Length: 545
Image (cartoon, rainbow, N blue to C red; front, side, top):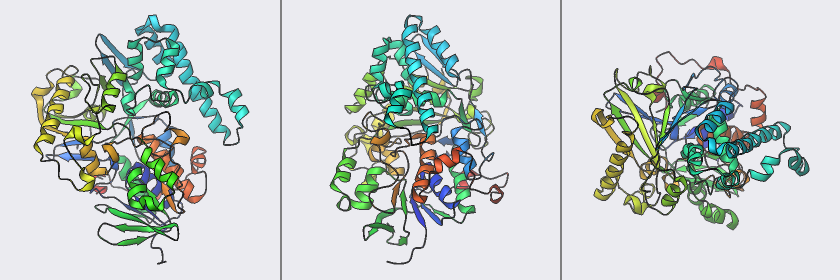
């Protein structure tokens, strides 16, 4: 075997890969990160248009970012404490949920959230109390078990965690049925489920409880935009002897004598390392970059069987008005139907639902002093919904990962443009007259997502967080191949910013043979803040290229 050039090579510069790399680098490892796109960050990167507007691909808001919160703890561990400022959305209504005849402002804190739900749906009061008791009980029991460590025995779990035992792995729809909740109350509770895009009949109760608990600790946006997160992680990597290469696509993970040995690039160059960590799409990692012939039949079969989360369609608009004059510091979740389950089922069947929800969010309101977001007096805005994944729906055949040139195809473009116009029309129910102020317009389909991230099904959420695919039903960081590790949305930590970054800590711990997550939660700091000296005019987008 050739001598190793690096201690570890990370494939993919999403938040999971970059967090893993930063933690390894601050623990003395020589780390190289390889990214096929020209801007690092994965779903946390931003893009710019007309030298005027900046749009977030995936960082729209983050929960639990007050001091001591999940993300601040991860950042502190690598020397980034106080290096990123988090701006809080309106705590009295960080999300505004709009259904026919109902406007519901989601407020910070479980008690106030409960009060507003009961006030909005007095006929469902008993059921709402029961449902929220289960959610809060689950989270309290999970926290207690995590603090106790891995030593808890099954009898103790049954005794001390009754909500966890009874409800954690059951479908959310069963809990709603058990509580006797009406359709409108269910719809309000489910409105933010687009953050994981799984039908309530498939969603484990613990997943939705975790989502609510995460945001009810407060909703935040990183000052300077989503690109700040990957840029700061790259700064830590470089300050500790690591490197990142963009525009570098990995063609194969090298396996020699049954163990990881490095990677071969699409250019033919080979890079050596005894540890390879993939933040790339799970299926492409195992079935293509490794090759199913090198996997056990059980692993290959399980990988084939994983279902991907529904993908997202996003419309990006530049406006010639200041939205701060028209809306509070909130995100809007809008839908003109209460049948959330039916909307998901239509997408599973490969068709666009007649009624579909929208998430409407704008950095111009969340971070109004960011000079890159929009010119003075203007705004940028993003409008999203979940959609079918099938190539046939989008009028493509093999997809961009296989090299298909799709974006000039007439059928693809007309389908994309039709949905774009429908979403703008929907958004006008929330922001009247929006269409009259558009000066820039474009949209991204699941095929676009596949083009830039090579994700199976064009999803940004990895494998579906369904009953049979959450917790231990997801891949752990370590694989059956010595030296090969996984990180990112499809691993046990789950998707989203917190899932990806805490998962990155867990993967780094698996590589080092330590429980880094526990060490970080206990306050350990590995990175030296004095090594980080970005100038005030630092541009995170330029730094990440």
